[in-house]
Amino acid sequence: MIIGDIFFKEAEAEWEPAGAGISRQVTGYNTQLMVVKVKFEKGAVGYEHDHFHSQGTVVASGKFKITIDGKSEILETGDGFFVPPNAKHGAECLEEGMLIDVFSPVREDFLK
Image 1 (tube, rainbow, N blue to C red):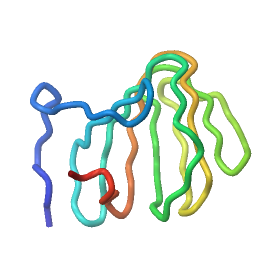
Image 2 (tube, helix red, strand yellow; image 1 turned 30 degrees about the vertical axis):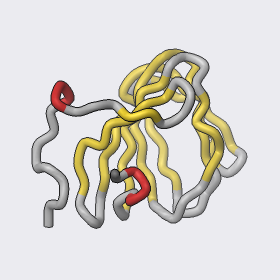
Image 3 (tube, rainbow, N blue to C red; image 1 turned 180 degrees about the vertical axis):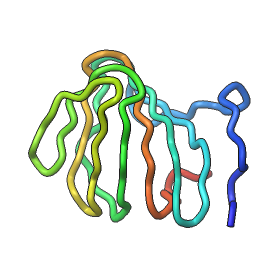
């Protein structure tokens, strides 16, 4: 079952604020899966938080310090990470970039 649009065109979608120096675009979703692009300015911080969703993320561009359950790694373009449900995690942008987040189930709090 598709709830959002089947196709996504970046030029037709708005970026929404997601914190200081951070914005996001929801690219598609249904009840089981959501894909979100998250753009970071250098120095922006996605503060540590947790949620019940499983999350897989790929670094599309830039360089980030990623912390998951107290362990940190520097990740660059092409690297990725997995966040289990309820694990504390956050991101610090070291070089301007973008993350592609995939959530299961859908992050209803991201929908308008």
